[in-house]
Amino acid sequence: MKGELINMSYDFRDLAAFHGVMVFCEQRQGELMPTDFELVSEARKLADDLGTEVIGCVLGGDCSGMPHDIAGYGADKVIVCEDPRLEKYTTDAYAAVICDVVREYKPEVLLFGATNIGRDLAPRCAARLHTGLTADCTSLNVDTEKYIQFLRENSTIDVEKSKWNYEDKGLKMTRPAFGGHLMATIICPRFRPQMSTVRPGVMKKSEFSEAKAAAVKVEKFNVVLDDAELKTEVLEIVKESKKLVDLIGADIIVSVGQGIGSNVEEGIRLAQELADVLGGVLGASRAVVDAGWVTADHQVGQTGKTGHPKVYIALGISGAIQHKAGMQDSENIIAVNKNPDAPIFECATYGIVGDLFKVLPLMIEAAKEAKK
Ligand SMILES: Cc1cc2nc3c(=O)[nH]c(=O)nc-3n(C[C@H](O)[C@H](O)[C@H](O)COP(=O)(O)OP(=O)(O)OC[C@H]3O[C@@H](n4cnc5c(N)ncnc54)[C@H](O)[C@@H]3O)c2cc1C
Image 1 (cartoon, helix red, strand yellow):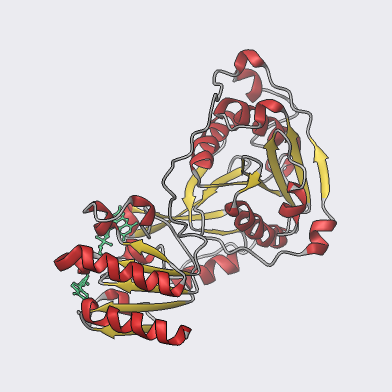
Image 2: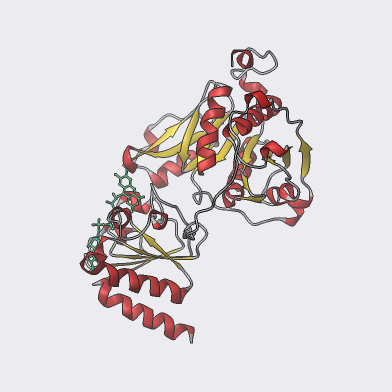
């Protein structure tokens, strides 16, 4: 560790030596994760504001085909780190290689998905690289004008009364704090790279461009791993046999809240039927998950999943700030609640004031009729 910090060609305080926005692109069993494409799309915007390049970085046993897919979402260059010991994720091997890549390429920004792997890997790398890390970000900005606009739309700060440095191109990393009651913006002004993990599903994936994909520059990185330092070996990966619900990729989510409490079984049955007719999936508020009525993979919100479905149907959900954090960017929101003052109606495209047990059968019937 000491040796790493006094490496003369790498000084984490020499801000001017760092350029480019790098994205750690995670693969599992040879498949890139959807979050990679969201992050690369976001990195493209940041890099354009900085006037710099987007660098994808992928580790694995055989990464062929991956640079093409990463570049199609906006990466200029993809660093490929191939070694049989990188085929399956281990914290020690991945952290060692990523730190080596950072020492060589010196990116000013380094992004990870806040997946299980990203949450494990990013803090380890940040500590070794002697820089800061903001976990679980929901918004990133380098351009001060754009950041002010973000504050105008999402906060109660009186931006006109604050003093701003419009030359500042540091990364402003925003994440929910204090249980979602506050948004905190964190900066890393003294060290590089500026690192953050970003929640899956929060950033929007751009359109895939075949021209960009074809123009990708691929650089093979010389992986140096010392077996003596690799303390873990993955013997087998056992997948959970139960199929988990894919909320992040769903076009239609039908979510239930505590409002189903008077007849839980019937509420879930009806919501699932509506989801099935519409080709959607079943979501839920945390109250429903905490009550043990559905499993945690259905949870939408700050501590659950964030989605951008075309249609989000909220049934008997009050619309707490932590729930809205996971669904308010849906293209259309239909809320059913018997309380006309429920906060969910503030972000709803269509609101139905009524008892969900009476409204749901009508919605199912209408959906079936429309499909005929
Ligand atoms: C740190 C932290 C993280 C959290 N993370 C999350 C998260 O990720 N996701 C999340 O959802 N919550 C989260 N929460 C909890 C959140 O604050 C709320 O408690 C929760 O979302 C409430 O769930 P609900 O809307 O189902 O229940 P309630 O708030 O109890 O609302 C039930 C609603 O159903 C309506 N209703 C009742 N009966 C009917 C009926 N028959 N027909 C129609 N409407 C009816 C009521 O009018 C009411 O509006 C978090 C909280 C904290 C502190």
